[in-house]
Image (cartoon, rainbow, N blue to C red; front, side, top):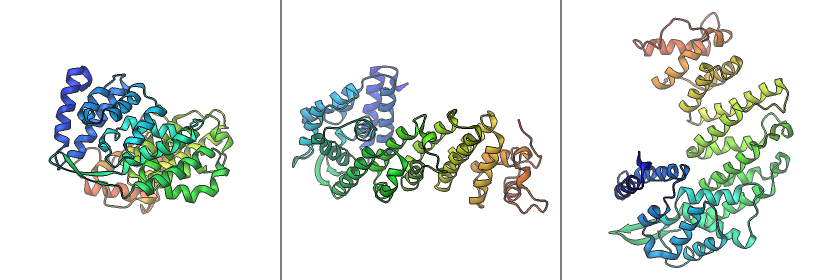
Length: 370
């Protein structure tokens, strides 16, 4: 609805911008505004002029023009990067909001971490500085006037962002990475470096031949993906999206039995996400796989076995509603249950029956496959 026309988009963004200036809840409103901007971009709409006008572009014309040019073309231009680097290296830089734009930041991350893309060494430091500046700087304003600029984390973020980029640009194979794993784990402590590494992992593992050449039980790139999920909770959704993409791929290049083991390994990565707090989306996805008959029932059983092994009461009603129909299905969990009812599956069902009485979904009737 917001993107229905220019007027509705402009009006909505002005309203959101005004609300985002409030000290309470302003950051959430700002996030909503950014999501609308991303959606408009995905629909092929050029909303750059609105974005720049709301962040005071007229006061910093050259920097604003450079930003607008890259956003409009969806590509990074070394000349525009140089203008931004000069502006944000000066004693009185423009507001960080001018470059704290998701679409712009993604352009820089893609430019630095996409395998095969070469950046002129003369410009690489500029890319790194702008990206680090946009993701670490904190500004204090009073009555619309900037009073201070906190750069405490700028130097360390730029340092580890550079380390991550150098490792990712020089390595694509698993064996070559092993010596650099400790350094990459350090880099993952910094959100922007973690986002860059995740972008690089996506490109590497999406190659159709990846699992042909990487035959380890858990390839090193997916070990790194686990660490991304551990260190940066805000990237867990993107990690799950990548795992879903890999899980639903045919993998026709490898043997059928290898495909099954591969899918189990990917489910292990999803279980890891569950263990790190990304619970409902992962479990909902696996439930949808069963309902849509999207995968072998043995894989559903494998997932449930692994999840039951790491969970314990109390369970939320939302979680129980997702898991109960699967665990209560004898076709899936009959082999997991014991006669004395002391197994994990029976204990889960008993807990739900006792604590969620009255809800139709939690019945003692045994279900079978759809």
